[in-house]
Length: 94
Image (cartoon, rainbow, N blue to C red; front, top):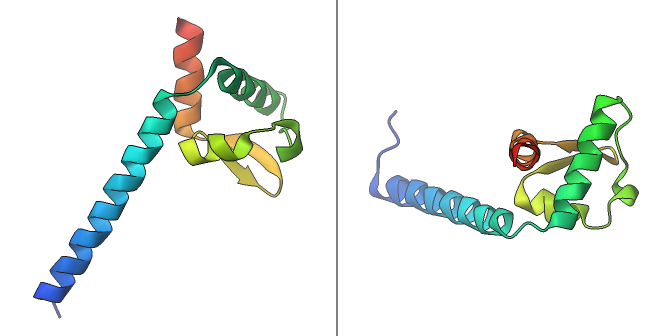
C-alpha cells in the first residue's frame, strides 16, 4: 500500500522541515565555534589517537559541542564525529 495520501504528504513535509531547521541550527552553532572549543576538540582527537577517550567531566562545554554535532557521548566517553574530525583538520591546515 502506498503512503501518498494528502495527510501523509503533509506529515512528510513537516518531518523534512524539522530536519532542515535542525541542520540549519547546527550549522549556525558550528559557524560560531570558539578557539577554546577547537582546543577541546583537538584534546579529544589526541585522546582518541592514544585510545584513551576523554570523559565528559574533562570537557566543560561538551554539551554545546554535542549540539553542534562535532562530539558524541558513549557511556561517559567523548568521541569525535566525522564533522568534528573535519573541523579539527581544517583548523590544523590553517
